[in-house]
Length: 230
Image (cartoon, rainbow, N blue to C red):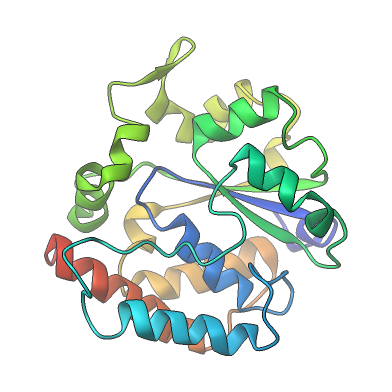
C-alpha cells in the first residue's frame, strides 16, 4: 500500500480476528479528519473522547469486557449495510468498515458489499503467544466462538485467511497493492501505538492526532484489567 493508493480509495475495510481491536483502530482512524465519522454527532471528536473516558478510563464498570463498538456499523451485518447504504455511498471521505475474514468473504460473495467500491484493506495478523494479552482476549472472549482455531471455511483453516496471499485467493478482485497488514501482536500494546503511527504514515500518509495516544492507552489498560499484564 502507498499513500497515493489510499488517496484514490473510497472505503477502508479493517479485517481482523474477533477480539483483536479492529473497532478500536476504526475509532482512532475516525479521529483523523481524512475519514468519515463512525456515527452522526455535531461534536463527534469530543463525543468519541468521552466514550473512551467513560468506558475505558475509569477501569471496569462490570465483570463484562467492554467492546469499542461506537459506530453505526459494528461489522458487516446485512440489515445495517442496507440501512446505512445511502449514507456510506454519499460520504465525502473514506468510510471505515470492520469485519472478520470469513464474514467479509461471505458478504463479498453474496454481493452485500458490492455498492462500496474503490476498497482498500487492512488485514490484521492472527495473534500469537508473543502477545499474551491479545491472544488471551481473542480466545477467552465470547466472540471467539465466531472464528475458533478449529473452524474451516470451504477447504481452508480460518486462521490462514489472515495471511495476505491466502486471503487474496478467496477474494480475487482485490489486488495485493491494495492490502496492507497490521501486526496484531505489536499493535495490541501500549507501546504499539508508536508502531501504529509509523505504519499509518507509511501506508496511508496520515498522522493520527495526539489525543489518540491517550485513547489507545485507556483502551489497552482496560484490557489488562481483564486479561492480566500479558
